[in-house]
Length: 439
Image (cartoon, one colour):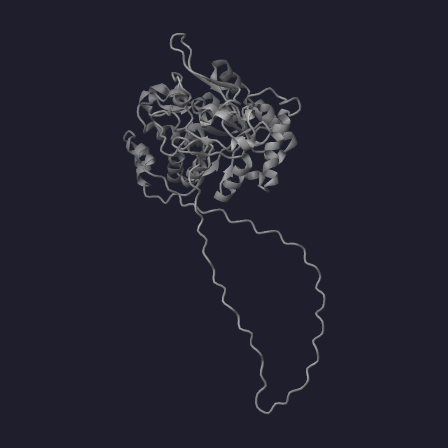
């Protein structure tokens, strides 16, 4: 089922033979006996030299047509003119552009192909969401229990039968949707590596497992989803290092009861993720560990302070009005506990003024006042914006009516809110903006 392996072409180097040249006496010079050479003095044993690290692969940044499409779709004004003026680049990689699960608008998320595409689009930081298998090996998946929507597990009977909840077809008469639940912790790492990544989707009206898996939204594509290559966390570290990008692993909230099997605690999980970077010799300053659990961030601050210093607290409290108010009023408390970076969804950072212009929100103002840096998620995840943009634009829906407003939102986040980075499902868009604005 796997696609053809890539062919590596090696260049053969021809070693030129070296002729041994003997010294000859010339003219009438007499030949004198030569004393046998003294035995060479024993040289002190040299310490073993560490291998030189391989140089990161140099990707030229290529953005493709989408950023240009978005700029052309903008309303006329100074911002559009400024973005048009830099259309010919040059464009370079930037840490302001963060590949959300890679480049998952069009590539299966958390696959090698998605990550490589994001690096090509100039993302300076890539994300591996980290969860674990039955044999406690760390792998890149957005959710511990999403294999039924992000892989082909339901098409492999011997693995599908291991799912926590097998596929159940939709029942129109009873009004029940199709369902399944397949977790990384249902299978071993060896079994996980048999799977192919696909676009994240499921058809609730499906009556067969194949129909259930074939549900990619129409603003995405299956052109690059023939068999996405799944990755372990350690493999992602190796790949990102070779690409010359930084790391933002997210420790996922487990989908199983912890301690797992009675003895694998949340702290063990949090430590294991960091240990992978230490084993690979990665500079902690290149790692932005994330979690929706404040306890995980506080654990890293206490136990792994070099990594905890730039750990990211993903703030989902803003999903309710009460939680939003709690978040706003508690910013200084976060800072006092050592948290340096917060990361809420886009909508929490912006609101509309009386003229329906997008401006920074109370949350953004409070975070900056507490001295916190801000990262946000997720641009290019809403599909076409003509209908208002959905979840990510809910606080500014009255100001959103075309795809070009993606760039308007990005501009407010960068210049007015002052975010240090933006997650995107299509990093080329953020890379284009960041290069134009010198970020």
